[in-house]
Image (cartoon, rainbow, N blue to C red; front, side, top):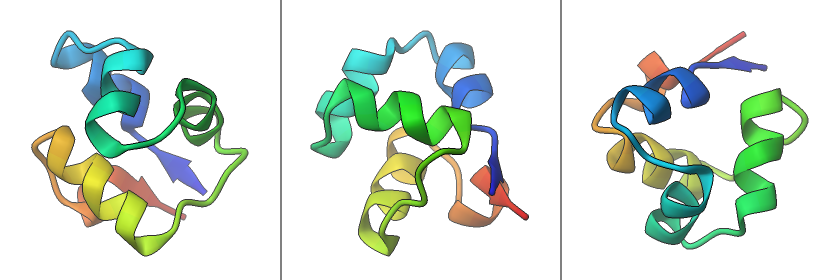
Length: 62
């Protein structure tokens, strides 16, 4: 699954660690999300979208 997490995270000036803290995950989870190696739960997807001030639709695509 393709996503825009890294693009949106860096646009907001957040580190992977800061995003991880905001969404209640580990930094490694953010790394795997950005690389498309991990499909998040619906709750995590909503939390990431909220932290990045966007919607799940705009964040993830197939």
